[in-house]
Amino acid sequence: MKKEKKRKISSLSILAIAGVKSYQEKPDEQYMNSEQLNHFRKILRAWKDQLQKEIDRGLTNMQDETSNFPDPIDRASQEEEFSLELRTRDRENKIIKKIEKTLKKVEGGDFGYCDSCGIEIGLRRLEARPTADLCIDCKTIAEIREKQRAY
Image (tube, rainbow, N blue to C red; front, side, top):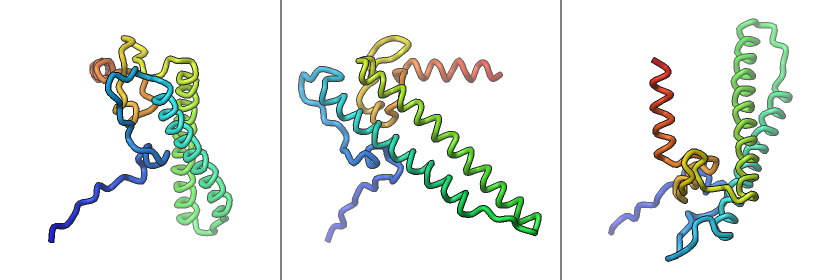
């Protein structure tokens, strides 16, 4: 009997969060048509909602766990946990701002095109990183320049 391998979807997958499957292009379909825009709108909104819930849950947990430990090591440990939690929430807030900026691009008709050269970013890249604003070539060049400046 042959065992069937199931493809494991990461719980962090943006598509899984939105509850959608990868978009299947139809032959001769226009890039960033209304169906594709709705697909990405749904992904972006679900991702934003999920991040907002995480922020709310994290802040609630911090309020619930606040204790005044008499032991300095326990207090330092709790402060370190809170610091990590706050950095995570700050990162999530920054992502939410990028998502909001991207949703404005969806509504304005600029979504899916490279900010640098103007070509199509591509559906698969956008599904992997819906807030991408550079095509893979421009992003690669930007990363190379960034590495050169670091030296």
